[in-house]
Image (cartoon, rainbow, N blue to C red; front, side):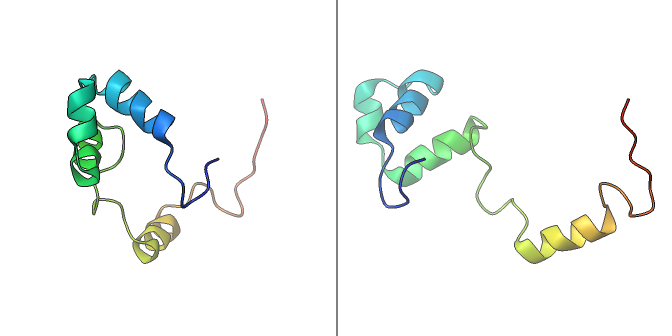
Length: 76
C-alpha cells in the first residue's frame, strides 16, 4: 500500500490511460479534480458526497443488521 502522502502514479496511469482510455496528453493536462470527476463518471470511485457519513452508516447498520444475536449461524 502506498504511503498516504505519496502519489501512486502507476496506478493513476493505469486508470487514466487503461480504464478511462484517455490520450496521454489529455491525462497529463487534467487537474486532480477533473480526474476525480472522470473516475466518478466511469463508476471507478463513488461520487463525492453520496457516501453516508459515519453517524448515518451506524444508524443504517443498527436498523438493518446483517444478522441478529439470537440467530443461529449454520454452515452447510
